[in-house]
Picture (cartoon, rainbow, N blue to C red):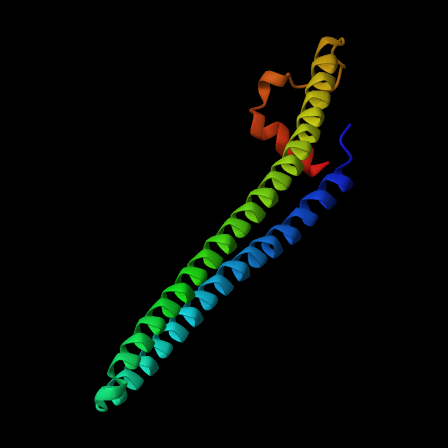
Length: 161
């Protein structure tokens, strides 16, 4: 027989844990976007700073070559920062996906266990209803046959007990 209190406790626990797990996964994903935005903004700011420095130095002919070198270095640095940010974002996405997958698999195991308990309860009730139907009928009351109930009726009877 299914312990209704235990089943209700498991369902309540699932209802509380699932939103928390989803919220944590969402927070991880939102932090990823902030990191990417920050890195891109930093790279753009560095590039703008270097371009301004380049323009200033171009005014002085002697320092022209040095400014070009600084600009190339700044562009290389900004490319490295962007590449690093994209790699970090990909790592975070992969971590978030792995976390979500683990959470969903845990949830699936818990739901499978709960479904098994519900199935056993249905089987027990259906078996007792069949046994009662096979017994000689009582003089005052008739016992319904399992075929008198749709699966939803049986589940409703389980819930109301």
